[in-house]
Image: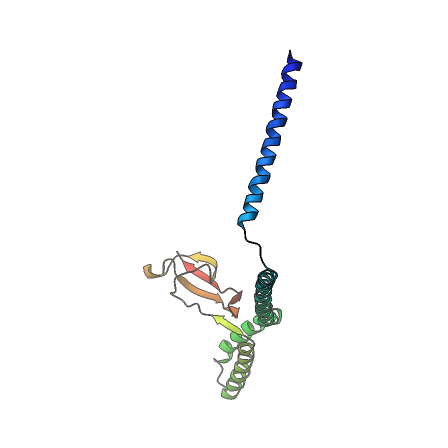
Length: 187
């Protein structure tokens, strides 16, 4: 009995499948008939428009590539001397400490000579892009621009949470901080 049912089912399903295939072919023929045939000129114009679009996209992509590489190159030039400048920062710190001590001297010629050398070094570093990060006593502490070394009891209530002392100057090269200022915060 099952064999007979399978036989009838397979015949019915085959006939149904054939009908569906014929219907699908008729639908696709109708769709093709509805679409007008393109002439050679129209087809060429359409192909030309596609190629122009591809060309414009490729050109725009290349322009973006040129701009991106130029920006990367400029960033590289700006920070290329970063290591040298970082190596000079301890020398600058020592010079600042020496200036403080020499300023106490009574010999004006020595003070004036050392000040000139100090300014020359400072101007040379600034010309290479080095800038001092401005942090002063009494400023509100901001961890993005300074490094807290320690906290001490604030000498007055208005210095709580603020910078009490600057132990070491900070410097930046362009927009990038290469050494954070080291500060003491009032608690």
